[in-house]
Image 1 (cartoon, rainbow over the protein chains, first blue to last red):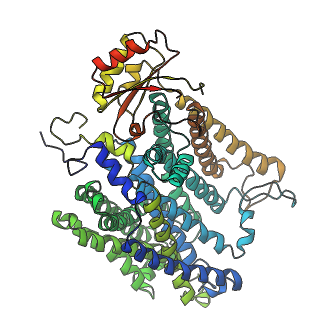
Image 2 (image 1 turned 60 degrees about the vertical axis):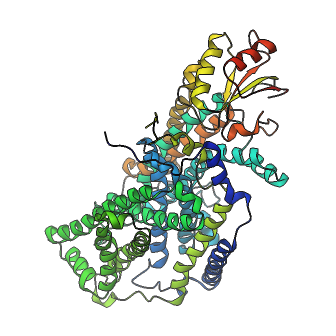
Image 3 (image 1 turned 60 degrees about the horizontal axis):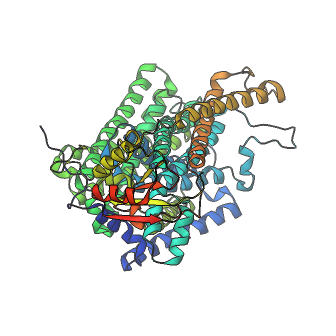
Length: 452
Length: 174
C-alpha cells in the first residue's frame, strides 16, 4: 500500500497547532510585516487618488472611447472575480470531495476570495460612470413607475450573481471561522482581545449538540457554494456570450471562463501561500510543499483546459465559415494586439507546462515566478477578449485602438494595494489556518493513524 | 436555548478516549450530558445518542422559497406590473429568468440555513462561558448537568476518575 504523506509536518500536538496558528494574532508584527503593509498602503493610496479623479472628472480619463467602450474596468472586474473562484473551489468543492489537504489553506484562500470579490465589485460600479446612481442596478420599488430593471439582460444577472456570491462566500467564511475565534477568545490574556473575539465568536463553546448542527450547515453551505461558484463565472461570461459580437458570441465561454477562473485563482493562492510561508515560518508545517505541488498540478491542468479553449475558438472560427468571426480571430493573433494575445498564450498555456517536472512543481522559487506569470496572463486574457473584439468594428471607418492612459495603469495596479492591504490585515487578526479543521487531520499519514 | 445549569465536567486529552467515555456515560443511563471538544469528533452523535441534524430539511424549504421568489418576482414585474418590449422577446421568457432564480435559490438557502444553525445552537449568547479554557484548544470534556437523570456528584466523580479523567471540575453555570 502506498503510504500517505503527513498533512501536518513536524510531529505536532493539538496544543502546538493552536500555539502556531494563534501566534501571529497574539504578538506584535515584526518589521517585515510593516514593510509589506507600507508598500501595500502606498499602492492603495495611488488607487484611491486614481478613483477619486475618475469619479470627479469622469470615465474619459481612462482609454474608454468609441469603439472600445469596455476597457480596463471590465477587464479588471473579470480578473478579480476569477481570482476569487479558487477560494470557493478549495473551501467548497474540495470539501465535498473530502480532500483533506485543503484544510491547511482554505481559510486564507477564502479570505482571498472575499477580498478579490470586494475589489472586483467596485469596477462595474465605477464603470456605470455615475457610481452614485449604481443602486439603480437593483430592482427596488421606485417612484419612476416603478420602472424595473431588464431581467433579460445578462448585466442584471451579473448583479445578482456577484452580490449572491459575495454574500454567501462571506457567510461561509465566517461560519468556518467561529470555532477558531472561540479558541482565540479562550486563550486571550488581554482584556480587549477577549471582548473583541468574544463578540466575534458569538459565544461558541463547542458542545457536541452545537457541532452537530454546525457540521450539517457547513456541509449544506459547501453543497450550495459549489454550483454557485460555477454559476457566477458562467454568468460573467454571459455578459459577453449573449452579445451578438464576433469573438464574444460563443457557447464555449461558460466552461472556458470557469476553467480560467480556477486557473488564475490557484495562481494567486500559490503566490500568497509562498509569501505566507516566508513571513510565518511555522506555517511551513501546515502549508507543506506537498500542498503546493497539488495546487501546481491543478494550475497545469486548468491551464491546458484554457489552452484547449483558445484552440477550439480558432477552430470554430475557421469551421463556421463566418467571415467576421474568422477575421476577429486572425486579428487577435496577428493584428495590432498580437502582443497581448501572445503574452496571454505564453503565460497561460506554455509556461505552466513546466509543471510536468516534479522538481519544478516542488521548487518554491520557480512556482512563485510561474504563478505571477499566470496572473499576468489571465489579466491579458480578459483584455484580449474585450479589447480585440471591440476595437475593429464592422465598418473600417469605426476602427480604433484602446488608448491606455496612466489612469488605466493605476486603476488596475492600485487594486493590488487594496487587496494586499486587506490580506495583510487578515493575517494578523484572524487565524489564518482553520484550526478546527486541521486538528482532525493530525493523524493522517502518521504511524497508527486511523483517519487516513 | 436552555437556561444555564450547574454540573460536573470531566476532562480528557484524546478524542478516542472521550468517545469511549461518552459510550460508558450513556450506558450509565445519563441522557442530557454533552461533550465539549475543539473540533467535531466522528461518531460522537451515535455515542451520545443524538439523531441526525434536521438542518438540511430547513435548507430544502429555504431553497424552494428562493426559487419561488425569483420566479414570482420576475414574472410579476415582466408580465403584470410593467411589461416591456425588449427586442420583441416574449414578456414571459422563462430561460432568461433562470440565472436570477438560481441565484436567489442559493442565497435564500445559504442565509436561512446559517440563521437556523445559529438559532438552534442558541447563538449569539454572550453570557455563556466555556467551563474550561482548554476545551477549544487541545482538551476534550464531557459535561453532565445537575438536572440529568440520576445526577449524583460523588458517583459521577468516581465514574470520571475510573475512566481516567485528567481533571474533574464542578461547574456552577454552563
